[in-house]
Image (tube, rainbow, N blue to C red; front, side, top):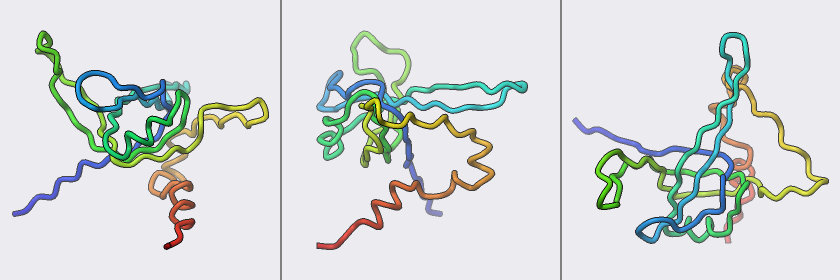
Amino acid sequence: MHHVIANRCELAGTLTSKPEYVGPGNYLRARLAQDWEYDSKGKVQTHRQFIQLQFAGDTKLLAESFDKGDNIWVLAQYIRRSPTEKNSTEGSIHEFQVFQVHRIETGARTAAAPKSEKPVHQSTLRANGASTRQPDFLEASTNAWVPL
C-alpha cells in the first residue's frame, strides 16, 4: 500500500514587522498575524494568532522587499524543529517554510486610501462557499499570464 502525504498550507495575513535574519543559518524570518471573528455565547469575539514564517531561496529575495503591515499570501510547508541553542533542550519550534509568496497589498496607506474592510465572519464564508474558491488575486494573476 502506498501512502501519499501532503504538507502544503496556504496562509494569508499581515506582517507584524519587516522580515529579518534571525538565528543560525541563512534564513529570513517573519511573523504573520491573522484576525478572525467568532461567536461566543452570543457575543462576537475577535481572535488574533501569530504564525512564524521562514523564507529561503527565491522567496527570500522577494521577502526582503516586504515591510511591516504588508498583507501577503504564502504557500508553505509546516515544519517542527528542535531549538538550536545548546542550553535549550525543551520544547519545539513550529514554523512554516515558505516556497511561494505574493504581496496582496502594501502596508503603507495614504490618507486617501480606503480603510480595509472588517474581517468576514467564518460562518458567512462557509455559507457562500468562499472558503473553497480560489482567491481573486490568484485568479487575476493566472489570467494575466502571457507566454513569451
